[in-house]
Length: 273
Image (cartoon, rainbow, N blue to C red; front, side, top):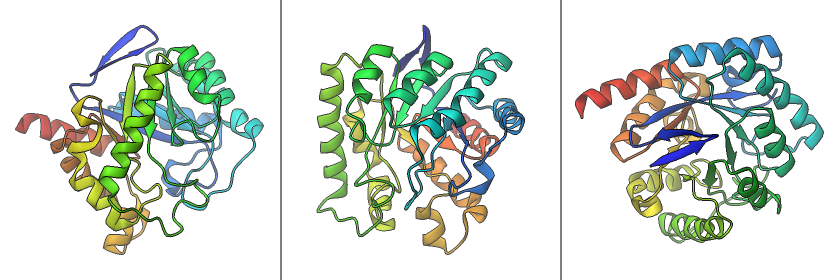
C-alpha cells in the first residue's frame, strides 16, 4: 500500500484525499473549473490548507459527451500551473489527469508525480511505456468507450466481474512493463448507468482482489444527481454519504471537489475505527 512519488514514499494504508483542479471551461462541476493562473494557485492553496494530500490537475474535460481538445491546448493549460504550483508549494504532490503520453511526460518533467489515466492506456499507445520510463505511480481506471460515447447505452452482463477482468489484464500488462506502483479506479460514471455504478459500489471490496489501493471518484457525479434528481451544485451531501461508505469498503484515496468536507469525513471515520 505504498507508492513512490519521486523518492517520497506515501503510505496508503491510511486513506488520503485528492483535490480536483480542472483547468477547463467545460468540466461538469463549475466549482472545479479554473482558467486563470492566479485563480488556480488560490484554489490549490485552499485545497492544501483544507487537507488535500494530492492535487489532481486536468486540462481536458472527460465528462460524458465531452469533445477532445488538442494536445497543444492541453499542454498550454496544465504545464504553467504545475510549474508555478511546485514553486509556490514545494511539498505538493501533483497527479496529472491525462491519457496522452506527451502531456504526461511534460507534466512530470514540470513537477507532477503521478499519472492519472482514464483510458488505461487505450487512447495513446505510448502512454504506458512513458509511465514505465518515468517511473511514477499510475492510476489505472476502467472506462467503457470514450468520454464522447461512454454513456450511450452501456451494457454489461456482470459489471463487477467485467471491471475486475479488465483491471486484472491491465495489471499484468503494467507489471510486464515494470510499473509496480498501481492505484485502481473502478471508473464510476465512465461508461456505466446509475444502476451499474451502485452495483459496482456495493461490491467495491472485490475490486483489485485487495492487493492494490483503490481510488474512488464519485464527487458530485450522476450516480448522486440523477438518483436524487438534483444538480451537481446540490450534491455535496450525497457525496459525503458515499465517501463515508467508500472508506468503510476500503477506499484508500477519495478524489473530491470539496476537500474540507472530505477531510472532516475521513477524520470522523478514523476516530470510529
